[in-house]
Image 1: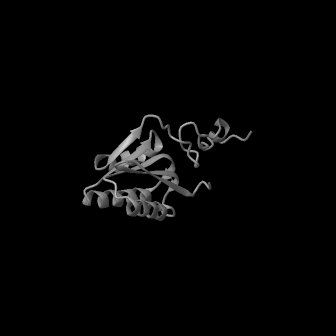
Image 2: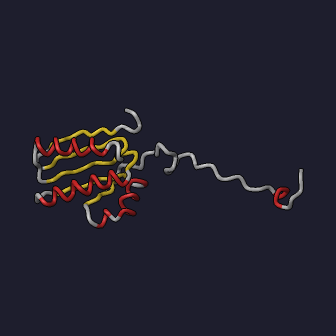
Image 3: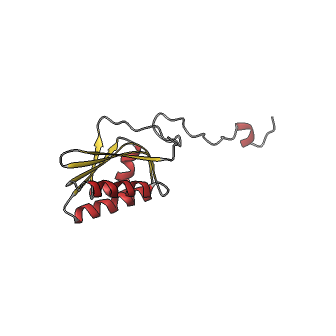
Length: 143
């Protein structure tokens, strides 16, 4: 799977539809999630919908907006949405956005944060630090 590609697998249980989302959820891939959710809803109108993001590598504001629209639509229909996120970077996006206060966002205790494709997560190679001037350069002396 290409790093930027979004993959959505749908699973149906007795009273729940679960969308397992992998890859990156952003402006380019958001329509794929919305299409998969609409297809799943047309196939079976479960009272509870779960979006499992524990294998997501990246989410931006467009992905958050898609989930917010899904939440509104389901709530208006008397249904519920639960979003499961991994601990770490993805969880912090939901915390900082304020969505954890208005949606059912659950942090998976067993899903650690996946390494970021951009090298900014725990355990990733740290970003290079800017070079510091040497003492010789600071007092104007040439070496």
